[in-house]
Amino acid sequence: MAHKLTKSFVDSVPLVPTGQTFYRDTDLKGFALRVGSTGKVYITESKVKRKVVRVTIGKHGVYTPEQARLQARELLLMMSKGINPHDVEKEEKARGVTLEQALDAYITARKSLKPTTIYDYKRTINCYIPDWKKRPLLEITKDMVSKRHTLIGQRSKAQANLAMRYLRAIYNFASYQYEDSKGESLFPINPVKRLSQTRAWYLVERRQTVIKAHALASWYAAVMNIKNDSHGKNRETIRDYLLFVLFTGLRKEEAACLKWCDIDLISKTLTITDTKNRRDHTLPLSDFLMDMLQRRKPEAVNEYVFPGANGVGRIVEQRKQMDRITLESGVSFTIHDLRRTFITIAESLDISAYSLKRLLNHKMSNDVTAGYIIIDAERLRAPMQKITDQLLRYMGVKPSAEILEHPALAGLSKSGQN
Image (cartoon, rainbow, N blue to C red; front, side, top):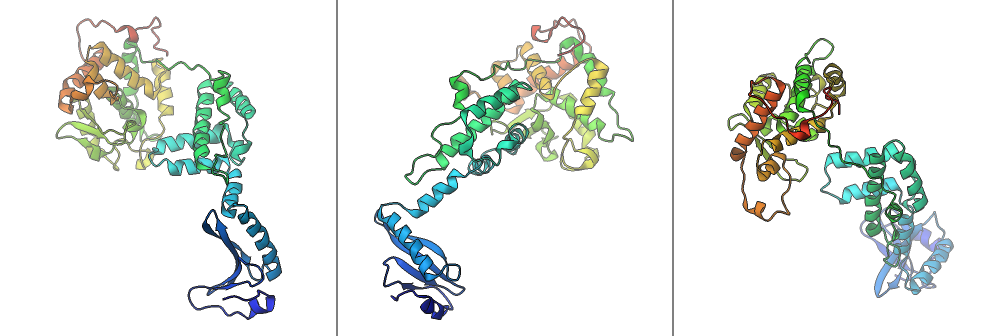
């Protein structure tokens, strides 16, 4: 319907029970009133690049007909120049996207990100660049990146690199996610590139620490001294968890998240389904591990093999007991040192490279031959038991003939300090 949109006319137009009715202004082509069941709204519409574009101006009552007509003229002029007002609005919104909003969008888009990875992103940003979270991404400059990288590096070079790698990933995502009204990226230059251009990335040596062979006996003795008491009813769970990581070579979270449904005491295997490389990982259980799990099973308090304090969730914090072990044994270690110790001992026993990779669930994508070799859990049982036996010999639990220590486990210091 066509009619001059005046206040008296718009006031007189009744609401419709269902659907929508349009009244098009006779004075300004493209200016109209949309009437629905709950209100009256001014709109404008025209073609932009042969496509009809409709833009909402606002409600009658908030806008008078004349105010809406003036707004419509501006929008129609813009569209006559081939500019889509929706694209302009989208661009203005994108220009204001903050680091926090970009991170949320990145996490939503990257559907394959693991919960631990998401946690690491958020923790790193909250810890090292929290004052940037509410800042528009476009305001983060190369100089800011360079200065903050140096500042964080005074505390930890590794964390400085990590924080900027995470920022770089978010910014790269934003460069494809947010565009201007012409369809071009709003973030064409990643400010973190400054670190590469100036060669400012810190050179961080990969940790190579293990528990030395001669220190395993004292370490094991200190671990076995951990007992439950009235002050700590979950200490023996921590004890078993540390031993489990050492005797399986599993990653920290893989062992901590292990559930009883992942354990098959009949076939004597365990299966990790949420691994780092997203490939199910099945391992045979050695006699030592079978004894541990059969002892723990009747005492299970929830679905996790290593439950958290008071039987809630899974094990999370081991730092206090680890410090106690270090103090008693003189052996300083991290959870990942236990995995490295397992790997080093396995290598010292001349276990085949293919079996070793399978034990550790490392990818062999670059090895053509490996693609033709199928190694199931049963074929890993002998190597797994061999590693267990060697660990027990080093710990003094299993008698042995003279043991020649592998060079990687040797050390000048007899304290076992890493």
